[in-house]
Length: 246
Length: 246
DNA sequence: AAAATAATGTGTTGGAGGTACATATTGTAT
DNA sequence: ATACAATATGTACCTCCAACACATTATTTT
Image (cartoon, rainbow over the protein chains, first blue to last red):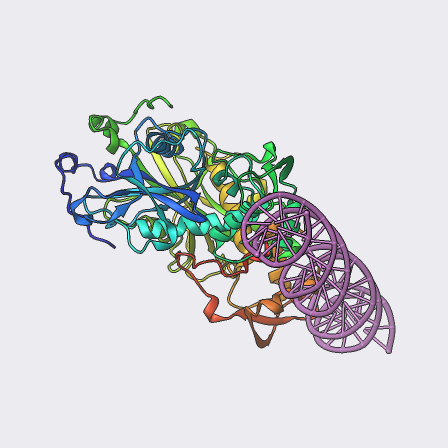
């Protein structure tokens, strides 16, 4: 079993007489956006000396009167100015040694936002978008958190209409395909992709065309409103026939 | 935002001056076993007055020098006497009002154990197996936790060789099929089931036969050792071709 | 203005995999 | 010895998916 971490801050030492309540709980948000045909994640320069020069995810301690999910929404609102974003809990990281200042257990969420959305305001000059592909190291265990969230996003993207949260309301099928290719790191056949999207019946044809493209413009679509699920919610029981997989 | 919970216990009041550290973190284990052709879960009579008459999952507070995963293993070892069991983190439940005595955030794990295993000892007379199907209500939010874990188990069972942790080392294909049927609540075609299991290439034919069955005995199989993964570990990057789903 | 270019939009075909279903075999019980 | 019940394996059909080709339309070039 792991040894107790040395508690460094004065605050932590004050309350060291009560073991079980010396554990802080935080929330970390992996905020994805799609720009320049790449999947990007929002990072901030780490403020800890141990990690000087490294970037970290956006997180904060959970308040005592605050639901866990609400804490992640707060982070997002404070950092991006956006409300009603797509947010999903992924995993809780609780190694004793994951935070150098003491025992902090963190629950990771990932979020999908439209980088072109008019309400997006990065309220801090140290906040920057980083292409996910180029990220080698992060502060704390945040690289592992990022990887876990990216995997979850990929799983979700295969089955559920979630990636539309990364796009503007109106988009072409080419843009949608490029988005899937960026998330999954694969090349997709254009014709088969369109057929499968058509079968899902997620989209409405807007009878509008792209503008300002240097080639033949494509039709514009939007997601059917009934699939716009922004909040984290409980999954219903699986629907697909069990026989199909076992 | 939710209002602060009334803190009832003396312990909690002592430390009420430090907001962020008044949050306790616990672990709850949904321990599944397969018996009598049913999926069962291990429950204990709730010790809180608010929930008198109701059952609850097995849980405990996380210790300050204890990894989160280690806490769930400890619960399992303390309650069942078993080591090296299959355990997987599922979700963290963090509503402010989920625990009547104060703020307790809990991380839920599910576990799969062989009810016939020689090391299984229920170290408490109040511990009992309950068929999952008959459970209508539990203490706290434990019914929601159970449902979430059952859904996760079903998802996992479709794709990965995990259900073997619920069986003895040697089993027949009929027993395996009945297990899948119990978990998924479906009927499966015997011939197609066998073909799909054969394709997965998970099993070794032991060249032994069932004994003490009142009909023609079937062959016995065991899981190939390379698929015996007992510990919670990070998932690798998804392997299946992205094109198959989008 | 005509031709070349590049992307959109739709259709077809072959193969793999899954579902529904039938028959022979083997051990137990009557 | 016969009936019975469960094991064990095989086949036909159908659906779905991947690979692939061609016509269309707007833009750019000559």
